[in-house]
Image (cartoon, rainbow, N blue to C red):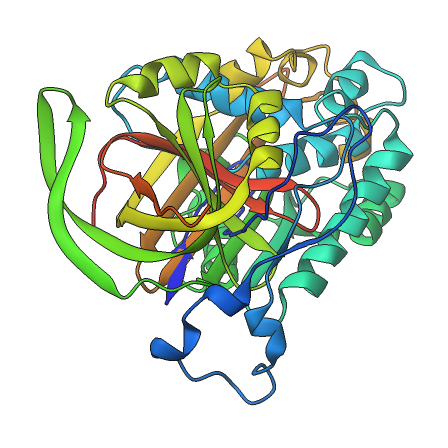
Length: 450
């Protein structure tokens, strides 16, 4: 069946994603990552015995039966995305809250802001440092130009993966022409002028755009209060809807253990099939890849014990996750996964400051590309970066959307053995776009809601 996941990030930015993958006995890489393609053993999957949903004639092909998987090849991994997730999870005041964020959406917004920063300023240096191993503005531009083009190419057959970015400005602001051209060419982004003095009307226009991009999933991206006393809002929306490559057909009600002493009755999905799987002694967790049709996969990281989620969150590291992905083997797995859906809102100002991104929030911020004219030149800073996200996973599919909004203000005014993978306790998850290695969504589930 298909899974649907939705995530909204309000930085005036929104992202969505969904992913799946399978693995075939990969080994842990050395400094030089091995190349090659591992193919799912489709001959051992009883496809004929299962009812298959009708596909459009143009889509029905042997491609649907072929799932190739190899962890994204890179000698330097995306540490920032995992640092961001870990910081969010550790800072949650309630340790039993569900969490979902879009690391890709946050990184994209920070890349856009780096284009507005002065060359070689402290502002630009901090922003570019978030872009993994990318160390120059030109490389950042090319990375996102190729990534956004890849999203369109790799996901057009089986998934809806839409990434849209727009900068809304008050009508007296005139963004630099070079900045506007850069946004359009490298980031597929637009700039639109609104009358921010009429905050309700401006918020209505922004929300109408977000509703259209996310197919109605995100209708309340901003409020008039978000617009009031601001000069610009940078918004990014990501919307993803994907079909399971290996569909779930069985469901039942069972116990989900939030803690050793507390449990809920939830709806579970179940299937037995060949999946990429690894039991990591170092992480004290199992990791499973559930692929969608196309180039996206959902990874579940399941602690060995009910209360193991707390240790996992504290020790979660990018390199450990990547090593576990390379160690995955394609084995037969009995998968029991709860249906879950929830929303999550967060301000990222403090989180980003903890990770070293500080200048954009200070009066010393250098963002000359955002405006021209004596009234605002050199007088803008980012007041906050907000994100709204949500996800819905069920036996039919996953739908996800995210929106990130950057509020900018005038700084002077305002094997043959069947493995068991029973997800009956809190777990960490992430959705990866495997053609580019980007983590579209990531989070933690403590209380499934179905």
